[in-house]
Picture 1: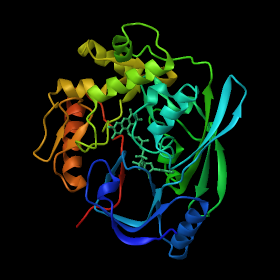
Picture 2: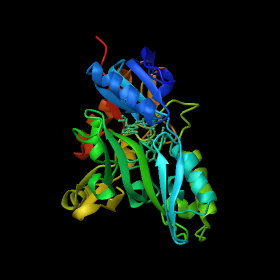
Picture 3: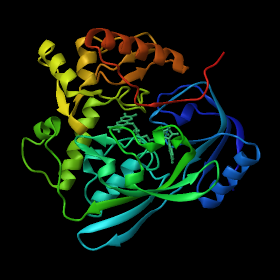
Length: 341
Ligand SMILES: Cc1cc2nc3c(=O)[nH]c(=O)nc-3n(C[C@H](O)[C@H](O)[C@H](O)COP(=O)(O)OP(=O)(O)OC[C@H]3O[C@@H](n4cnc5c(N)ncnc54)[C@H](O)[C@@H]3O)c2cc1C
């Protein structure tokens, strides 16, 4: 039986380990519980905010309204013609467990996205990506509930506004759409993407099986990214900036070693990590929060209780990158709630 509780601590619901409290909180395991929680919010005119595993949020101390923790489960094979398969996955499933299961079942395409923390329902929100693969390449559509009206809708991938680490669900109005299920298209015949430099090096330039590729991704990630269970963090704190090709060329003449990657519509993606590294931020910070020694895009929490200290370090990094390179770094995680007095 689902219960809506008041004044619930979210300290164990965010991997950055910040202290925060939800005005109201409900963990929902099925459609009935979801409907009951949405009714509760609607009767009291409360704003509703979904929370998965809290691995991509920076929480302010107070979250007004209802925080809805998605704990729904279920993976259904809806079609399988021996070449391609269609899966429907409930929002509350753990993403990495899904990737492991798919690989075991001979359903391929998600290997590069192994070990990304979080839930299935949050994966389309920032169109998770890693090692040359983005979730949007495999999404057929998502089922959503409009938390304002309670209406259930099916959004084909083309209506999800997917882009680099973004989607319609991150834009204004998108926060009202609660993702309840994600439909994925996967391949029985693997066509693997392993030309990302760090993967290629780890594979000694030898074509892998899907299982080998997935294990390699996991090994490379484990080496490079601090485990949030040990050192609280939310993975990359900044997106790689996308700039015009002209601007990237000018910058490249000043900084010939700056890594650049072609991006959509003639634009260029720059390496935020490289710029942060150049400015000597790696390992630096304050006593309670610092840039990881292992990866300069990751901020690690060594004892900060509130978002303030984390955001102060992020602002200092943004200011120094803007000053040196003329590039504005955008935060990757979502900032939720209200700051304290
Ligand atoms: C160590 C580490 C490594 C990471 N590596 C990567 C990486 O390689 N690539 C990458 O893309 N990301 C990466 N991330 C970020 C994170 O794993 C992903 O963004 C993940 O999809 C977040 O899932 P979550 O369930 O924890 O979402 P949460 O943090 O709970 O929520 C994130 C946002 O999605 C919204 N949301 C959550 N569930 C739903 C839902 N069902 N419907 C609608 N909105 C919802 C929330 O309101 C919030 O705005 C990493 C994070 C960590 C800690």
